[in-house]
Image (cartoon, rainbow, N blue to C red):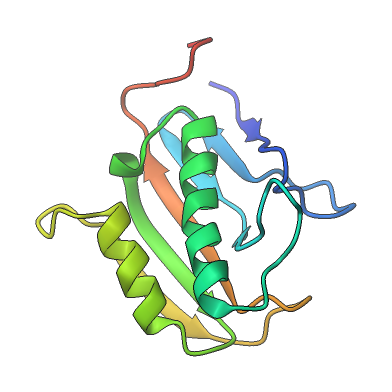
Length: 133
């Protein structure tokens, strides 16, 4: 079983040779998932918009790796601003079943380039949803 890079258009890490995620077997680990608008490439100044895009981007990364958000078992939220309210709002939207939510940890720290929030996740993908299997 070989490790595989997961690439998502619009979520590149600049000129750094880093994929959006890496998968080996059922384990999928993301890199830092930013709150950038993938279509425009713009990082919104508004914290709520960054959080909304970050969660949408997390979903895109997990799906590109063959999973769904139901496969996510842990999320770390890195925050340069007070993001608890918008994160909780998106959290409940993405994981509506209170009996089946991933673990979560929020850390306050400086983030580069105007980022106010960044997500990192682990998923355990038992049933591969990729078309190429």
